[in-house]
Length: 226
Image 1 (cartoon, one colour):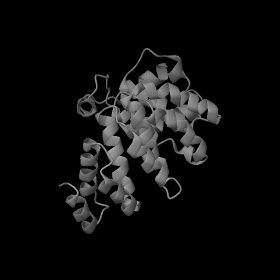
Image 2: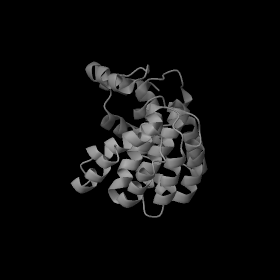
Image 3: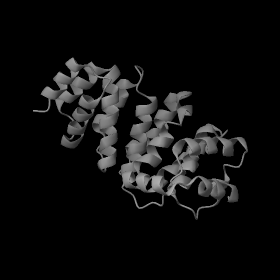
């Protein structure tokens, strides 16, 4: 652990820590180590075979220490069952959007066996915990917005009852990204107004703000605001 603590202290930036903390809406301690450095260090810990030390010591619950736990799970050589066991230990540690989203995008291993991953993600979107829901939704956003899974993803997103603001934002974010490649499907869903008022409003706003959506589609989306 001394190696890990030393790295975090060496690369801590107090001003960046204050800025990052202001974005998280969380009481967690933030050292201010930049994400690219954490990703690189996580790969180093995996390569050296010492990443498990992160899980052996639980006294340091800073933002960076928790994030390192999640980031190392992307590259660690583990059987699928064991990797998901560590993920199950990581998800309850998520208390803000960054601890969720930065890890989800790294967990590309789910693309190797998507059906198995889909089944393992189901308890998270069925959870009544805000950040468990967000974890599931962002995983779907990052790895399952494909022609093979889009209908199932949309079914999950429309049936999920967000347990908090950050879960609702995740659903809206996922729908706005899905709109880029599947505009007719998502537009029909928005027309039906089957989403909660909050998620509907957030989704419309995100689509309108997207640079990847045409002006003609944006006009159609604006009409749904009334």
